[in-house]
Length: 382
Image 1: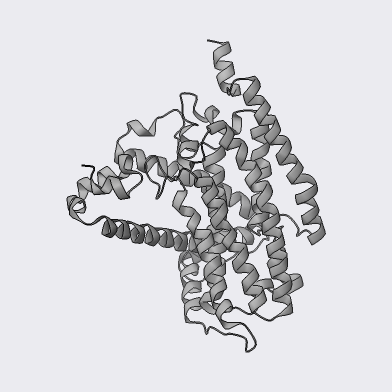
Image 2: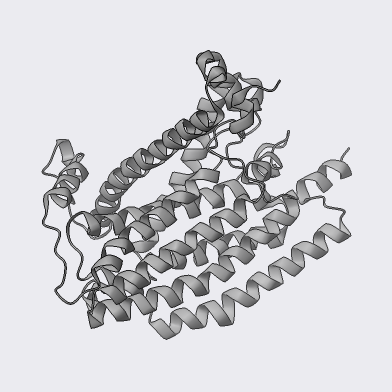
């Protein structure tokens, strides 16, 4: 009879076996109880990770902004201001949670949680390491695209329920922008799915392993995928509403956009959702194009469960945080675009380019029998 851990935990071969060996009592508990405990643990880990990432990320963002703008940045709370994010979090928790008198109270309260859940739910299918993934779904990419749509719903509800004209304009901008740029983001991931032959994020990462190290990454598979990577980064920067595409909340035009009437912890949930979505899109870029958790010229699966997961986790987070840092760098470097320029870029340039890349990758796989440039060079020289 198959153990309970194998029944309820999808990654039993890599992680579930180690959990069962560490806690043998799991095999004698009811299936529903084990599933419930696993869901609670995974949700708690995701929330803690997002909280830490948002805190440290906000500190890095403000320090980077200070360096680019020839300022000091946070330097009061803790050594060199290193725990400023803790003070900001305590301030948001203790701050009064105000609600406009004419707002829709139910939707006004619900909107920040939708934005937060929509951005954090994508962490479930992120392959952090060789055996570290909450749920290795066969439709992992579809799942991320589906749950990320909750962010646009949260933004639209927050702006409409505030009963504020600036909030409504920001919400309409946010909904139009996110829905529009979901198309080039999804179309930029489809070539990766074609090369890997799977919608599972873990399988996509595994398909990029081999003896050639970084040359097995999808980024170097063919010229169309190389170009598609930069199209994805551009569209993802707009989908996450990062500068220069932060039109739903631009302070110079809309006070604070869809968040104008929010304060306290609900205001903080929108920022948590923003940083969570930023991490998810950068993690997808790492998994789809940059080899994911693969260690160059080294097979993490042969290093043992502990060291293999530890080293591959460090590699994955290093690649992802590098992309996050690039996004922050662009945020404080480029000027904000206009609404018409943003939508024109999406529908007249990015969407046709993604279809061109998709056609190019399809023809490449058909003509060269699925082989990438590194494999063809290796075959040419024996």
